[in-house]
Image (cartoon, rainbow, N blue to C red; front, side, top):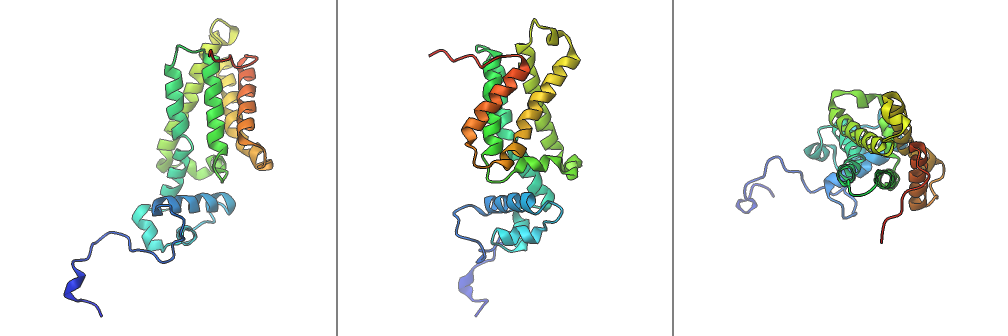
Length: 222
């Protein structure tokens, strides 16, 4: 029976409790992002509907729209989440001029690989989507551009006094190679997902320093 006096006023605009939701302990917003990450990387962004994301998250499509306006919003948040922690780390390392640039670049490369390979889905593959060139993803592109610039600044410190330092094109090439190596690890990781992430991240950071012209990362003083 409905309409009784004991019901109180209805709240407008809040999602209803959803019986379809799995018991995962995750908040609805996070549940939707996990579902979108899985579907976008497994069956493809274009082939995934908002209804499919909602159903995979265990909720109704109408409930999903309380948290996200559509597929683009889901994709934008997923993409930004792959850059934001590395960008914050990069800013800290760039400012930490008391330590060698080689050590700081090594740490940035290692932490970046740990982030990109530490998720259950290959989110880096989403960078290649043609949709990422749209206006909705300008913030992601700006963040990624700043992160790449931080890599270049650290490389410039490493190369100071050497030939690449005075050659902008040579420095840009090294930066493209290092940045491409870090972002390309997802393809290598996908081919061998059982490889320990920590060892993989360290080996990738070592390789990045060789591209920069450094034999190995300087040891930290005890």
